[in-house]
Length: 378
Image 1: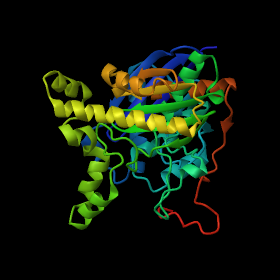
Image 2: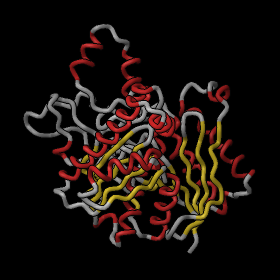
Image 3: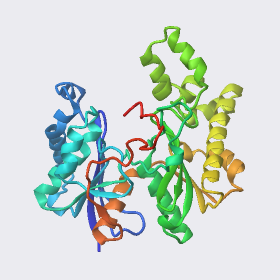
């Protein structure tokens, strides 16, 4: 059966919207794919992201009308749903509980509007809405959470939706299900996340939000702590330090750009520093892949590279030379998040994957063990 699925992902100044027709096998047919821009002056009228709900619904409806796509033609709705908190991966039905939670979670980012927008559309036409591998998915093994700083624990902030989608795709190529296989996946875009996927669960990963793991095109990744602490106590502005961690570090800070194509042009022109920095990012990524291979005991069905930088043949080849001896490597350059949302909706509609009910209870709230320090962030 051919299903028509509407997917969306709200961002700071735009909302990605797509409509696909698919039976769940092969690449879906694109009916509509747009990045709906929102006028900054109109957004400025809203104090909080949650206040933008009706505005965003109306702008998306206008986009659908202009493309001749009727809501009544949609079989299911699926989206990027921020603010749900830590849950296991998979598919959740979007209901009133989800919407109330995300709108009151204290997060002031339009990503929280994904679930309420989809729920509003679904209610209009009496069709289901789903959150698929939502961004705060946390499936870490307990042993992976411990750090040497009492009260600071590792949590899972990775490119979950795209990571799981490309692992599902590679598993299918290998003739197995995602839940049967072991994979190490590296998403290399503006941020860089590497995760160990053991039989359908991301049991260990670097935290792309909090600044751990390899450095990325515009994020610092792991750095020695003492110099940064010293910098802070010498009067560095907190916002400046946080920007280096999450926006202006990595390749951007080292060579002035996070565009790997520009960096390769500089390398071709003889820029040895740019060459060394690009090699260092690939080197750190390969090293992380090797570490997560150890997490899986070396029993790995495949290594998957994804994200925009994974379109770069030089970068992929560097990593292939480092870790290709561990397992077959497959590169899916770019991101497949909208396609992943559609695929998840089809799995839900066909019963291929169980749809879960959201409770709002996080998967991890600290260790209830004698002597365990309380979570500082908790």
